Length: 266
Image 1: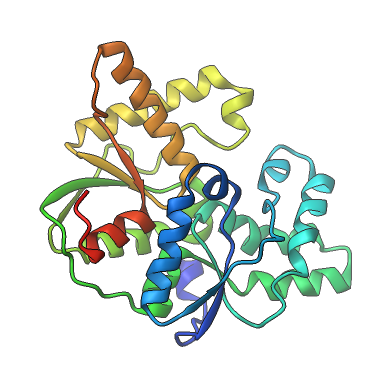
Image 2: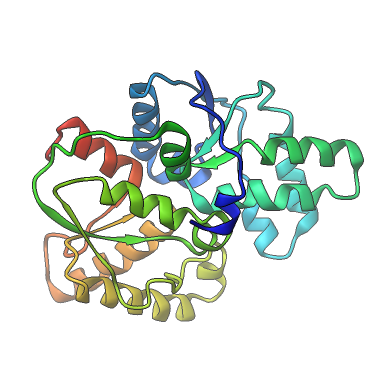
């Protein structure tokens, strides 16, 4: 287990949690957010979604604009007033809120205390399902072969590559294959993909090739940014090659888990 996870104290299963849905889930993959809710509600947990939530502030932070990141983060500090876990279906956003919020407010004792309090309640979805919920549901789907891609922040800050893998390994009819250089970035990197598109394209092309070479029929990830980048590049290559059906479809981990354990075969 990742050292940051093994040192963390995990609570017993709560009755209530907050959902921090993330911008990409909200704008591009709402079904992943809904499936997160479905997974948690099936475990007997009431999910609270606060409509006032906005961005976690990571785009500004990773682009070198701490003041702007602080202004965005400040909007989140006072929202989650009950002492409930905050579940984030993204290791990238979860890493920002858990590890960087206290840094952003280090010079303000009051806000720093708030940031620390909030950061200690931040859980990436797969981490929460494994470490707190003890997720165990029968796999109702047919045999399939998938590859797991974990975002850089999820792997290096949250250690949630291990809990994501554990969830996939718990599904009896799912074979998980490993792509070459599994730890390498997909090339998204938030604003990096927009600031350096040629470099991003080269990185994601290499990632798509590795995923295809692994024999995976589908890529699963707990981060929508990576999924958008990987499946978008694969789709463009399909278009150029005249392939109508997606050769490398992708799915958020929450949706994959819900579909497999709820009996939906589509």
